[in-house]
Structure formats: C-alpha cells, structure tokens
Image (tube, rainbow, N blue to C red):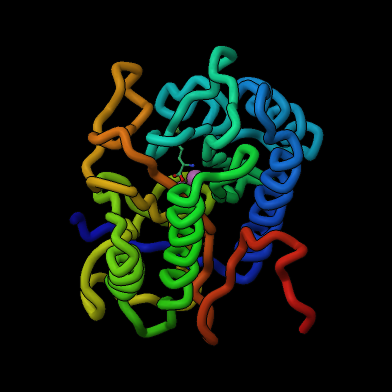
Length: 260
Ligand code: MF3
Ligand code: CO
Ligand code: CO
C-alpha cells in the first residue's frame, strides 16, 4: 500500500461532512419508501437524482470514472456497483442494496443500506442482519490511537462466526472533498495492524458480506460485481469520523440519533 498522506479534517470541514452525511441518510430514508415489488431500479435512480438536485446537491457516482447512473443498486448476488436499469424490476423476496453519495457544498456523504423487497427468506434475513451488525462492530472498533486493522478484524470475526464470508476486492475509503482517498479500510484483517487512527480522519466502513464464497466476479459491463457462486451478498455503509472521544457516524439517520 502506498504511504499516502491521510487528510485530517478541521471542525469547519467536519461540519460540512455532517451536512452531506445527513443529506445522504435522508435520501436513503426517502428511497426506502419506494421499495416494493414491481418498481424498477431505474425508477429509484431517477427519483434519487431528482431529490438530490431539489436539495441543492449533486450525485457523485454520475460520470465517476464513467459510471452511467446516479446511485448504485445491487440486487441479490450483486456485491456492489449494480447499475440501475429499467428492465430490472424488484420482486418479492429480493434484497437490494442502495448506495448513495450526494455532494453538498463540495463534501461527500457516502452511505448504503440493504433493504428487503416484501418478506425475506430466512437466509436473506440472517445475512442482512449479520451484515448490519458487522458494520456496527467495525465502526465501534474505531478509537483514536487504534489501528485500521482493528475494524476489519472485528468485522471478519463476527461474519465468519455466523458462517458468512467477507469480500476482499472492495474496501472502505477516506472521503472528504474527494470521493475515494486514503486510507483504504479492509473489512478483514488483524487487530493492531495498519495505519494509526487519529482524530479528524474521515472514512467509510462498508462491509460486503457473502452467503457463500467471498470471491467476486466482474460482469461484462465492467461495473457490476457479483458473487462467484451467485449466492447472496449484502452491504451496509456509513461515513464516519474519528474523534477525540471515539467515533462519530456522519450518515446516521435522524431517527437513530438518541437524545443527548
Ligand atoms: N458509493 C460507492 C462506495 O461506497 C462507490 C460507487 S462508485 C460508482 O464507495 F462509480 F460506482 F458509483
Ligand atoms: Co457508497
Ligand atoms: Co464508499
């Protein structure tokens, strides 16, 4: 890994990241209301783009390294970077990860959740609940003076204890005015290893957890990553900041914030 510098954000910059993060969380809350059998992933994309513009922001994915749409929609065996499409219609029992990244006042808020379409199978329910727990355990492994490897170790230990596997080919990332920057944040690894965590660092924790093999395969569109065995994959993502006290989740939805 290159020894790139990790940017530490000022409190003024953190405030802007908070606003972008809150907008991203609100966008997912909004899109969640549309999820039902019969809806196409393109309809979700188009509403995301309209809503983002109406809130004075732009969609970071659109045109990013040539990505053709405003959000990523990853259904069932798709690990990440699924491209919204009018022919892809959600059906009862699907799982869908929606990954959004609005840019507000120059700063990025990057968050994703996996939703159920109708009633999930018991396999899907266990995978999605485990993946959410993996993300939260990774986030709460963050403390100033700790190491990047603490995050992946916490995630991997829990995922594998539940009989699932951790995707290696995609990692969390530093984020600020730049969409993807250092550090890289693997969702597997060894506690006590890797770069030191310092107050002011901002990055994503976005584990992709598979039902079967961790191995990924790229579809011919060069974006859509699927599981090699075509079993299910789930993902959750928050943008977080390392603070003097511990960690702040910048993309936590309003209704999950408890009173001070
Ligand atoms: N939001 C994704 C992430 O979590 C990146 C999407 S890049 C795109 O890092 F080009 F596929 F949109
Ligand atoms: Co994302
Ligand atoms: Co991300």
